[in-house]
Image (cartoon, rainbow, N blue to C red):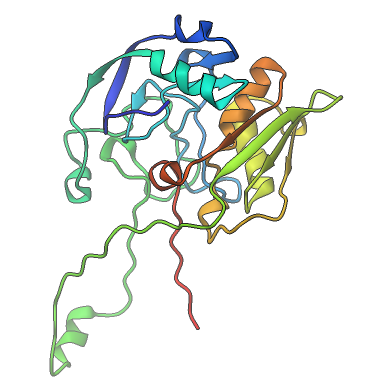
Length: 262
């Protein structure tokens, strides 16, 4: 179940009626998941990206952010239950302009347990996940020796990968009680570490299997869908799966931009 608001706090959530729908296995909210922050970035440890995510959070930061996880025997029962969940939101002013975000009056991550493992200029009190600068030589001297100096500002549009296979994963426990995660991912060992942090369990209890996947282009170098069926399996001991629709892949995933040179 996803947020309809760009910035909001979950004040109350009532899953009582929804949980009684036949076929519903469990409904999880922020109250039911570990409150240990992690990063979804598939990077070598210690990750440069800050630990700013929860599996489910009371604070919602974009339209499409996860509010609740609903697991059931059929897609129809899950869809029915989601429509019956009652949520009371405190709608907050969103940050919509990157130029106003830095040192602005609205903090995207005001929480105290936000942390950065690497010195990359991250500061949640300034809305910075990384910052830095580098200079070489005397720029003004170089300009002075030019016959023409052109100064312009260029803006590019937002882009998102659209690989053939959307984000998806399924999870189950083996006879040793180990969590097995079969995922459309490009980074199985990073995924293993990230799930260990998110679920607050040892890495030795997580096994990630990466079959041949239907495209990624870098977008599957992060954890996107894996954590949701994983927490369901941890909570219930039963297999679980999630398959993102194309719409979900566009609004609730982590695009990765790369320069390619020929």
